[in-house]
Image (cartoon, rainbow, N blue to C red; front, side, top):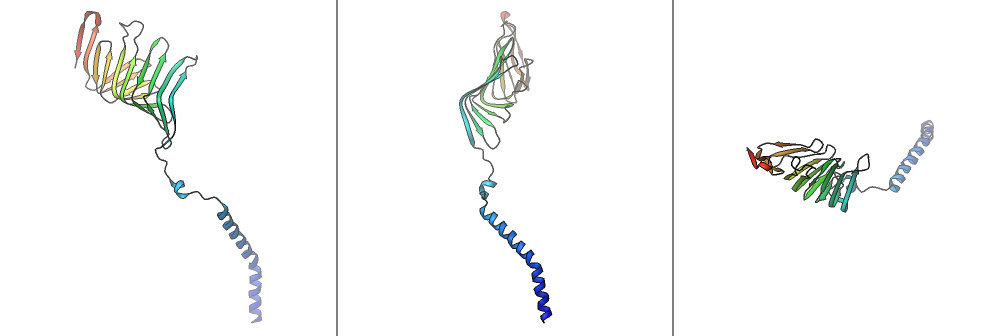
Length: 211
């Protein structure tokens, strides 16, 4: 019996350092957990909401070309930034593009939504595009386009829509189901069910109707 208790006592003595280390480790973990700040699980798991985190009133942003001349100007009555998708909502946005030796082009609407990079602007409600007349008004008259929706591709300098649109160029008036206007090449493409009246030569008063 004495040998048995002796073996037990020896085993306990050998395991005692391990038990003490385990106790110290457990106590340290417990103290760290108590003293560490806990994040609110609800806040940690909360999905970002489509809520405004800042806004600007009556803003104006200007982009300059390599010579320092104004290349583009974007203005609005109010711009609101949303935290969830990093988009911007703009009240009465207006974008004006300038090119050397060419008349400026302006696009505006009641409301706009711009992506986080500022490369795409969707314009809603009374969207209107106007290109001012060139030096020779007879050859390069004022051009306008009106629709309830335009998409502005800022980097490509393109305005397009897949909604009903009315295009005027001088006295000529056309309607279509869509439009693509390339401000770099000054090309206009009308899409789907194109109808209207094209005035071939304003002084002569002759017109051609296209259906």
